[in-house]
Image (cartoon, rainbow over all chains, first blue to last red):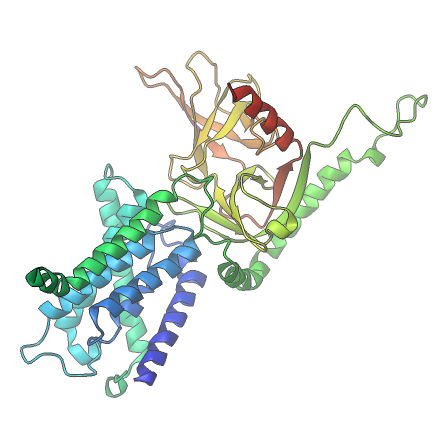
Length: 174
Length: 276
């Protein structure tokens, strides 16, 4: 229990620092694509975590990001929307016999099809919300849409990479 | 009644979601007016410290360029220094010059974090209220204007960049004196727009745009940029002017924060005029 909490806290710190110190300054195509890898923290929260705790984690994560980018409420709203979607999506994607206790939502553990639906959808929801709130208008709808789409693909690729680098299939307990 | 409570209990996570969404949306919309004190910004001490760490590492990559800029600027100040002038007539010794008095004070600061590719861009500076910084002070770089301080903590300050539609700076054409507003709607970190210059004004490509001053934020005559295109849409009373910013916003090392020493005096006077 305490190990899980510590592992998640550590993941939060590492991902947040990686985001604000490195990824935010990565100018891919003049800032057209921005990866927001910090959502991986929310994606990797334990499955059995109650909804209120997930939502709180989302709000705190988003608020921390807002502090770093001077954008009050922008990341917070996107993260809250994403975690709310996550609580419902986990219910929809549950295997027939339910989740085992202590199951982690990672690629080696859950399989490719499950993980691509889960992470892909949630990252897409987060990025679409974030980019549309950021430009704050709908007039160049497809421009913003493709920006969000490409950035989401980038974030997703980084999520996969981060997992291959950090988890091995036999040690993916926490 | 019990059914109602049971229903509310069943949708408690949705209720919590809506509550948190409401909080974040309130934050989002209450922060749009830039002069309001922003509680959530990068002038926060922890955030500023983390950005300083990063800057200490990345500084080494730009040392050469920063040194060159500083040397150039030193040279230009040296040219203006009193010792480089010889007196034309030796009759009067000026001991206390009462004709001129200092109006602006300049504070040197370092940019510890900046963005330029977002729809609204911010900078974080490594000095704050302890160095005399406060909201609504102008920030200028070596070549031109950079932004306006929005918020300051004891050790750090956050600045709304000119690359943000939240600030409109009063500017004028150096050649003709026609004035308008600098408004960033080009979404390109190298250019910006000047709006509200009426069509009868003759604007040529290559004209220099400078600050108008008088707003208590920027001194008059600070270079902003050079006119790149002038378009006249039919049915519009104003020019659509695009300028190339003279300050490269993608690489600001050291910047100067300008304090208008007479601001309080002028603001008080203007407030008295407005009072019925």
